[in-house]
Image 1: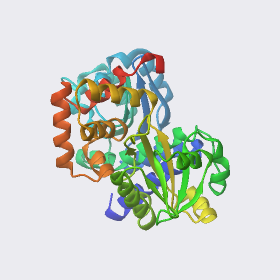
Image 2 (image 1 turned 90 degrees about the vertical axis):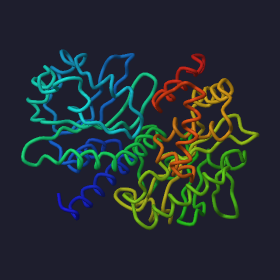
Image 3 (image 1 turned 30 degrees about the vertical axis):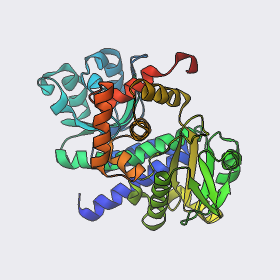
Amino acid sequence: MTGDADTEAFSAAVGQFYDATLDPALWPAAVEAAGRYVEGLSAALAAWDTAYQKLNMDLAWNYDPEVVRVYQERLIHQNKLIPISLRTGAGDVMQGSREWPGDFTASELYRVFNERMGWEECFHVTIERSATGFAGLLVGVGGAERPSDAAAMRRLSLLQPHMRRAVLIGRLLERQRVAAAGLADTLDGIEAGLFLLDRGGRVVHANIAAQAMLELGQAVLRVGDTLALADRGATAALRAALSAAAESGDAALGSRGVAIPIPAAPSADSPYVAHVLPLNSGARRGARVAYAAVAAVFVRRATLQHAAALEAVAKLHRLTPTEARVLLGVVEVGGVPQVAEAFGLSEATVRTHLKRIFDKTGANRQADLVRLIAEMASPLRQ
């Protein structure tokens, strides 16, 4: 794929994911666009939950239904990549043959599934992790158009923050179809606070939940006509995300604003999280024209389970306020680069705090911290 074609395919995939936040019917097209960008033969947005022992592959492109049926009925428990994926964190990319113990091509899974699908290799990027499962994009490659391994992994890494943002925002919109030009009216009833902002952060519209948040003053503040978050670093991250959304479009937003953690204020009972959806292209242009806004910003409380568990872990292991803040970032945002960007810190600083968190908690990886938070959550809150 040439440089221009690569850029065009990337922009198309990213735009499809963001459009799918407003119209869930567009998710299959988004998965196809991602698969084509990686130069794959087929792709699936797959989710695994250990409690149900099932891999949900409903959002798939170019899969043979009969091969999928055989896989689900006979081969799923032979897939050694599933337990390996459970040890990954958001943003981690893996190559099937490198992670598989032993010779992948000698396995029944390879013979029955990969060969019938035409796959010579497969790649997976983790989008979300929980204590019992994961969600990610799986792409199979092969044939004359097969990309290099490095190219496939690089492209999945570039796609991951945009997919994660789209999945999170789609969940906040309660999977309803939303007309972009009527975004404000349609979303007055959702639980998350919705702010439509221009490139300078001026509030063009705030839904009912957002207005209540402004009155409460724990997570968001109105400074003149502009929106500020109740943390200096979070506000800086929001400004950077708005600038990227206004000037360079979907693709340039990158990991900025995937999730911007807002640490709990002294008067707040839990931290909050903000998500930024650019409105400058695709099916979202209608909102930009209708409201003169460059981005929609969704603000919600961190999940009750996360908030209570974070407080418990911080007290139990005597984490400093900064360490607790980085831990919140790992749970809500993802890897070191994303946390650093969200908080306006250097990656080296985040790694230093993360090492101290590992030392205090006994965890060895970020995935262990996510599991620790999930296990600490009270079952009465679930």
